[in-house]
Length: 490
Ligand SMILES: Cc1cc2nc3c(=O)[nH]c(=O)nc-3n(C[C@H](O)[C@H](O)[C@H](O)COP(=O)(O)OP(=O)(O)OC[C@H]3O[C@@H](n4cnc5c(N)ncnc54)[C@H](O)[C@@H]3O)c2cc1C
Image (tube, rainbow, N blue to C red; front, side):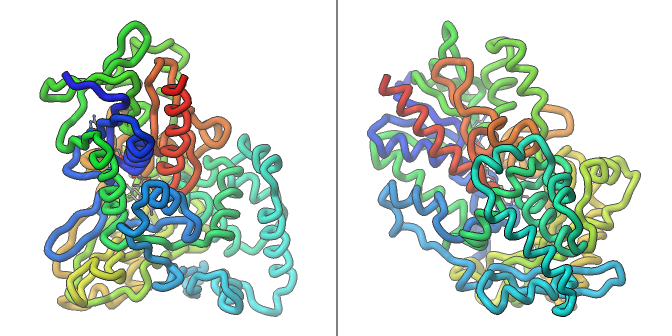
């Protein structure tokens, strides 16, 4: 039995953030995870000279991110090397209209390159009415204040955008695919409009495209070092079997191998549903709370390829192919999952982190090509894989030239729980982030980091935070840190 001030279960981006901040403020912290090293779903793999994450990654925002706030707070800003999209190209977007014509745009908000966005979404310079419609919507969304945004949490991104009047089809597709489904990995008929507007504003001011030399997972490995430097312990390769309570308060954890650790505070990064229903046990909570937890919906997952190549193929870290009208509703993903429809209308993400320094052997790349799907563990991936290959041939045909691909790995939903959180509910497990930023569970309705059990907190994508993927998890880490410090100091 070993005693700590705080135990953090899970060293994903959220868990590592809160654990390192608490250690830095003088608390004796145990950070424990089932994986070999910190990073969670974004753990960096080092193999055959490649450093890469299992899944495609693009960090948003580029500037003024909470990652920098974290590294600076911990005094670790010189131990990690920030890579900016401005230096490597943020990404290239491709738009395919219904006639099969493809236009592209090298992303960037600088003048005059930003004007090329109009051509990319099929708007010609003389189509002044279309340009005016776009300017009106952009102006409106950019100018919205917090009060106006807060009023948009009971309407979906799709419904809200469609209520703003006519706009070019390409612009509608771009907005919903980028700031709805693309950012939140959830169909835009479910994502809360307030989240879309906030993401639009954040991307407009902070821009997209950020990475770290050594990998995003490596960033969290470096932050986690703070725990031991300040007298705590980082325990990897240890699965937590239960979070223990006594008389309505949390008191510690027990691992799968029977080790027990005690603390007055346990912060779980293992997912809100997994924590309540499995690690603590639903019998420890009021029925209403359990029902609310069970009713939370997951965000989408990804299926696709990881290609290892014999020569450099991509010249941009991110390439996205948007077919016109690729703003699927949730029911369309359900139809695909049930074999009632084919995935012929989704956007395809093609990307690599091998362009960044020291991430791959010279002239080689690891390339991700994915589409979204439902998060169930046994999604039939063949139709999605065929659809991906067809799309990639349109924007990067050189990938399929002879002898370019040396090795192919299939990415399925079933891989996600091996590095992330457990699959414990039907239709759940492969989700990219956790619970969706959808109506009823985003913004003011997002589950809180504190729970009905005294001393028990939940951190990561499932609670409190805002942002795209890892950024949301780090935001949650900062917010839960504030709550825990306040609780301990009382
Ligand atoms: C396909 C895909 C694409 C993505 N693309 C992006 C992107 O482009 N940009 C972006 O920012 N984000 C992206 N993400 C999301 C990103 O990975 C998550 O937002 C982030 O990892 C969530 O952090 P977290 O702290 O909430 O939890 P996680 O990363 O899930 O970490 C949870 C940790 O808890 C540990 N754990 C769970 N249960 C136990 C237990 N019982 N005992 C011990 N340890 C346990 C796990 O091992 C894990 O380390 C993507 C994810 C996927 C899967």
